[in-house]
Image (cartoon, rainbow, N blue to C red; front, top):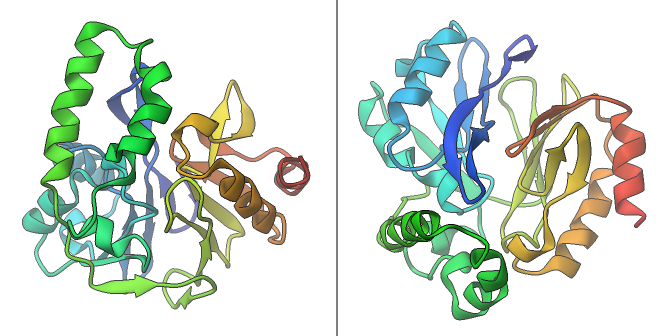
Length: 250
């Protein structure tokens, strides 16, 4: 779905913890840059290739991948995408995510504390879903992504009309949202979801630190936002500023 010139919300089918669904990465481009925000589960590179092509953008000209955080459904096909493009694809992520991405620290969701926190939800999965999750987790442990550039809160990247980095820790320590300055679009990563047409915070059980996640959401109401792209749920565009203020003031 085209959000504005140079902004495309991709819609890719994926098998999630809750079953079959979709993820919504973002594609940005201008005359010099082609940037993907988040890279799906392992094995999705060809889906990305087709979706980028359908947006009338040449996927071989991908220049950068910005990672909102290190969860597997956001980084799984990153290395494969790097291999099939024509040149070096720069990887950018917040500095606090770098050790998780590069395999220096165990992914947050695989720590004993988070596994215990998510256990109750996990018991609601079918046996087949639990087996799939176990298989994915084993692959995740061994996944290492080299990060070319560490990002920090307030950084403004001079691409595609300007991209402001907003550090929103809580879901993971280095989770970021991105504010597209020219088009007043917020890429929310997993800080926010859209459920039944309503913008809501991410479920608390998937956050490494729910209190910190709530504090981070307060920052988002400082921005003038016309469109919000969530990775789980897709686009939200109804009174964005009012809804962000409501969520932040809870």
